Image 1 (tube, rainbow, N blue to C red):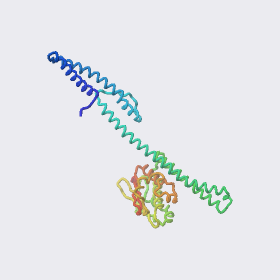
Image 2: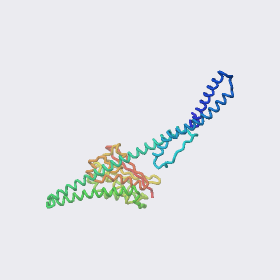
Image 3: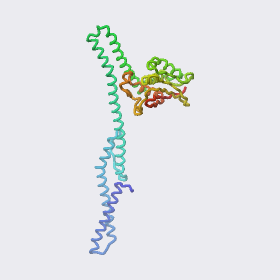
Image 4: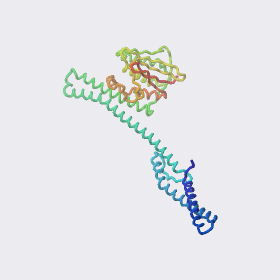
Length: 346
């Protein structure tokens, strides 16, 4: 298909008009006079030139006033684009150019709209989740304080107990605020990692020992496999301790009575793969993509009963990503879950 530019269009129309005028003039001429080839050619050339110039000017004006308006509108809607005046090139196929601009504008804006809609959904979910999580401790604290103010403060059977329960609610709110602050710092790179070489097996053993009493409450057995090995990694030990603690607590909270949680290590050339596996109830497949989102609950009722800020897995993900590593989860309902992440070998 030939390119249809204003110049080509004018040429074709002028050619047609020149031919028609030449043919018409020749027919009129030969009625009373013999055919004159020079006369016909002169009519054709003069009509063609005048028509071409006039049509070229007219089409250019039309494009300037009509199509150029669309073209400029598209460009003015593009974020960050300078609003320079656009000139029509008579050698260019303006129709194809406008079509390309419209398609490009449509694709870019669809992507931008999808991104904004996703951000808006995340914002709504986040606000809804944080308000939901804060309501529980706030209402419980309010109830205890009102009871004390209405006479319970003088009752020695309940005053200390209610104050301790109110303190527990306040501590939960403080934990939530601290976790949110930590996520904010991790996202904005305001936390400087203090990387050093340390034995990840020894750290895992220390974490499991610190959580032994919590595990015993649900009769869950904590096992560090390959515990006699020394595996050195280059990372921030305090942050990795937090990762191991959060993942282990999560496995205990969602574990089954008499189950187990184990940690295993694999050598992957430059990295060490750490796997934390439990024999809990597992997680349905539809929840896995959102598991590391802030406040995302697989089982909202039971999660609130177990406590926690609902930010543990989100913090884990940010810490691992701050080490420029990745974390993954695999789970099957009724069979348990396995979280795995990598660290740089020391």
